[in-house]
Image 1 (tube, one colour):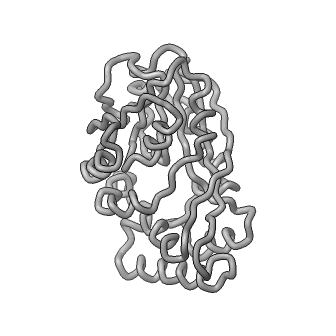
Image 2 (cartoon, one colour):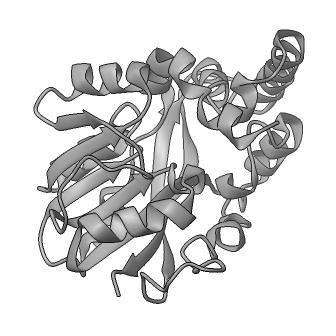
Image 3 (cartoon, one colour):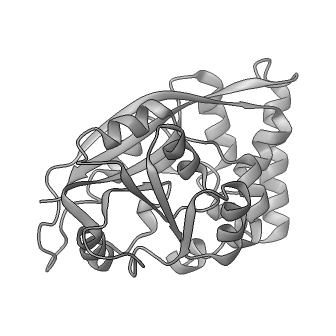
Amino acid sequence: MTEQLLRSSFGAAATAYAEHRPDYAQAAVRWALEPAPGLRVLDLGAGTGKLSATLAAVGADVVAVEPDPAMLTELRRALPAVRALPGSAEAIPLPDASVDAVLAGNALHWFDMTVAGAEIARVLAPGGVLAGLWNIMDDRIDWVVGLERVSGSAAIGPRDTLSSWRTTTADMLVPSAGLIALFGSAEQVEFPHGQRRTADSLVATLATRAGMLVMPDEQRAATLGRIRSFLGSRPETAHGEFTLPMLTGVLRARRS
């Protein structure tokens, strides 16, 4: 299964993505922006605007860039006050040194950093910040461990849990062969977060993961059925609303 196939899978589920994906902890966003020279922020790979909404809530001047037309349509519908442009991490439609920070919500792992690294550095002002944010499940909680086991890696992958997200993302800003050192040493921090869900809405959330979206229909239905049965079997999740225990993890570096 190619990265391109996974990367391009979200548009077909843009409405469900907008409805079910969580926002980001405001404390995480504030920490990501703390060293930035100002509050001009690019939300890169913005999807339906989950991170853009949090950025706007903390007072940032946001511009969003998203390559998928369906996702961009949802973003513009949900956040009409946010400037939203078609584009990608590898071809950012902004002038040089035009933003103080570039943030990516559950998107940095899709970027081709051999190209995108230079593009991000180009649009950043001196001393600007690059940060990737991921909403991760707190697998210190027993029932979350069980959910991860029955869901499989297509629904809950190594970037999606507290126990493994740091290892999986740590080298994303390390220069690869032939790429100059554009950013300084990266830092990783987690911030408490949560999302109110029911068993049905959590199933719907996991159904928007890239690995699930590209799965054959029969296999996808079987996987979602297992998840639904598990949630129905646990006292924490079987009846009514519950809080999905999460954290927002941040990987942050400054422009060299």
